[in-house]
Length: 580
View: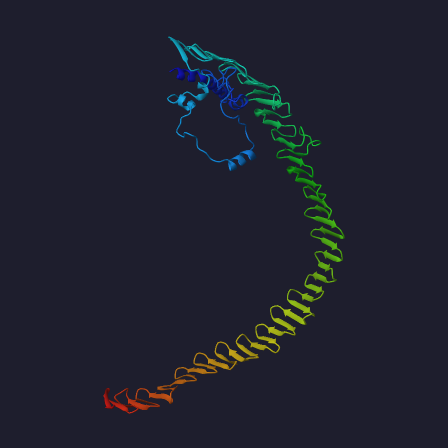
């Protein structure tokens, strides 16, 4: 019961402080400033908080140091090396329970509060009055009017809504929820309603600083190292800065800088500022820019390459070591460079040169001269090019192109006439009646109307009259087709001929098959001679082979067959054996 009472009174000041800070909108800042929930703060004072002794709070002079070697924090390299080289080992008795753990078994009191307790606890209980002593720790309460916790150098008291604490590093006076006065080492904080003032004296590595808040209207703070802030949310004003950078926002105005104590284009190394969306300006160590959207203005300068761009609506100027540009868009365009210049007055005139090259463009003509002396002239209905090759165009329909290096001469009268001659080909087309295509020594093709074609080549010839007649010969093979009644395909070792509907003949080096009307003849080469047969449908058929012969009347109504010394006859389709 005593431990529960002590823990309950320990958390009361911290809870009251958190609720009050949240009510006035200062909870995050106050928690950050005073370290709420950390040792030495209102929620958990260095002395152990209200209701329990602090770790080491009852430690007396002459207390022996703990057994074992003194240890110090090692650097990362030393720690990593020790982890790599240390031999793993087990304790002498792995199941032994350390005394500090054994002492806490069966209780939920934090070790932090049990540290200052002595071996003997004295308790007195007289109705609403309760007192507890243990070593240098004492707790007293007259519930619910008053409670007090004392230990050497640290005292905390609670009188209704008033909390008071005095210790070496932390002091507190709280009249919940209207008034707060707190001290944490060198930091002092005073809260009266929505107003907060915090001040920290210089100490250790922390510089002196102060903060003044009137939540939620004004927030201001500054530090001796040159950093600070000033926020007025209702006026959309937010500023934050350090000795070398910062950001200021006042409504639509903003300024962000680096390399200086304040927003000054003369001292900052890098700065961006503006009045959104009307004006933007910025610069760094090598470049500078300016943008004014309503005036269509953009300016940029860079020390790297000594380049600049300046735009004001239709006016554009650019500068670089390679040249300059001056435009009034979209009518006037002018650019210059080393040994070159270009000027355009749209849509009336353009003139430009680069070295020995020239170009002139007007609505009436185009004239240009190339680096190697080639020239082009274009006007309405006529165009000419002279260089390594030549081209003449009269109207869009007549073209004459020459390439003397390969002996090419091409003429075109679109879409009726085309002629192209060179050592490799001779092509002539009179569309759609005549076409002649020749590759000297290889092939030659002549078209008369789209239906007749005659081709000769080094391998043969072909004559076609679409879609009826096809005839030709190539590499010992030939073909003749008169569609749709006659087909004849001849190869060096075979031939197929069809003349519908009365004649079919198929032959190769070993056999012949032929059908003429109602007669059929077939022969093929066999050992000792040939095997042949003849049919006169449906009357009779006969045949012979190197070993015998045969004949039939009406497919076997009467017939005779001899194979060597064996013979047989057919009578009324019945086979009769005559000899073995």
